[in-house]
Image 1 (cartoon, rainbow, N blue to C red):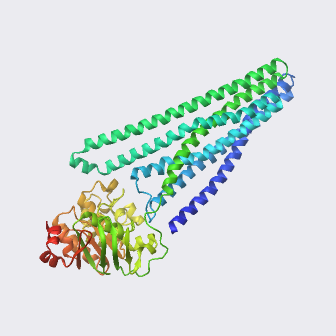
Image 2: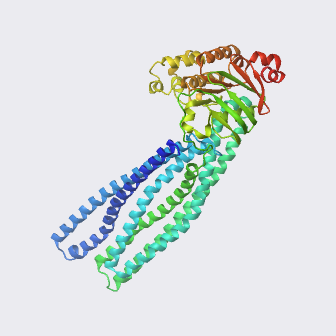
Image 3: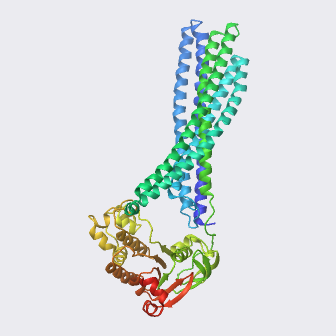
Amino acid sequence: MGAGELSGRDVLTRSVKGQLRRVALGSALGSVHQLGEALVPVLIGVVIDQAVDGQNAGRLALWLGVLAVMYVTLSWSFRLGAKAGERGAEEAAHTLRLAIVDRVLDARGGAEEGRLPGELANVATEDAKRVGAVNMALMSGIWAISGVTVAAVALLVTSVTLGLIVLLGTPVLLWLGHLLSKPLERRSEAEQDKAAHASGVAADLVAGLRVLKGLGAQDAAVERYRRTSRVSLAATLRSARAESWQTGLVLALTGGFIALIALVGGRLALDGSLTLGQLVSAVGLALFLLGPLETFAWVNAELAQGRASAARVAEVLAAGHAVVDGDDPVAEPVRGELRLRGVRLGGLDGLDLDLPAGQLTGIAVTDPAGAEALLRCLGRETDPESGSVELDGVPLTRLDPAGLRAAVLVAAHDAALFEGSLAANVTPDEESESGTAEPDLRTEHAMAAARADEVADSLPHGTATGVGEGGRSLSGGQRQRVLLARALRAGPPVLVVHDPTTAVDTVTEARIASGLREFRQGRTTIVVTNSPALLAVTDHVILLDAGRVGAEGTHADLVRTDATYRTAVLA
């Protein structure tokens, strides 16, 4: 069990305890409000019978004062109870969002499998919000139960018949409301699934907008999103229809129930079983019951939608990890020697590979699938189907994934830049995020090695210039240089970079190659690329062919002696 999981569990535990306290407080305050609301018609009946009908001015003033105090009490109890409920709902949603993000960023991975980034964002926002709203729904349900109970007791005191109607009829209404909420729950879950998929498709299209325009495929992309959006809209409309039917039928049942109470109360008043004041109280209580019973309908709908969203949140939080957990810390200092034995995964077929510590090693491939599989193994995004990967003689499966990520950094060529300044994307320091401070010496050296300083010089505000969402204000080559500078600035004991210069010109590529070698001197660095300029500055080159080592040597020797290498690198 990793430290991140313990931390996330602790946060959830503390949050649940806090939410329970708020639910209890909000429920108590809301129950006081409902008690006051139910007693108002009772007090009005008392005023009519004892003060108005008896023409006693003193009693009238007394009971009017009691009514005033009651209104002040119920007003403040409602405000404080609603505040506790809303705060509980928002904090619950916030805690869920943190838990989802914590799970998605877990070093062991797995939460993102089979899900588009937009789908995960939808779960962390809309679904978390709906689940958080269950807190308010539960409190409102407790308030409504309190109101119905008080009203039933008051009616029992006034008339046993009316009280029994309420006590026996309310559970029936709740049961019918629960049955009517089932179609809404099913359609709400479908609605959220389709909406999440539409969000994921939209995020993918926006991320690849430049490529789509370059290919002239924007019309096809728009049509794809239009079809997805239509499916999502249809699911939303079905959910809305189910909600409207559920609400309408519950309100009709509630209205019939209230009419029954009023009818029975009227007949009791006609035969003299009730006084005028008691009749007024009975009718007032019947009208008051409309509020709690409508609340029950709303609570049923909220719980139905909350259950559907909770299932989606639970799927993400309970997703299996992509790699097994390890408990051993990474030994210090990290020498940086990597060894692969019999590794099978994707394009790798029983790969045996030795990557010495402290050297700059180039890896060329004849099949891109082999490069992708190798990067996934070294970054421990997944474990090999068979074989083992070791760091300094220790299998990666025994090491804590978070500690391993700090020791071995795999910088993918398609990594993302974040919204903010160029400086904030190179270094995580707070002063760089603000863009107000000059980069430190280490950052300057990393940017110079990656030639990202030239990118900064070309921008209107230098390193303080915003790069836009995903770095879209930069060209492809500029983004690659900033990404490489970020990887160099991190300074891990082992750095693995994949095709860091595919979008830069040959002159700049040669300068980046020499800068990379100089900056990483004496530390383990692996460059997975077929770029002759990068391979030429390495200490040693390994060619992966058909998932195995096909040739080894210096770049110059392999170009001269190995035809497969020449084809892969120079063709």
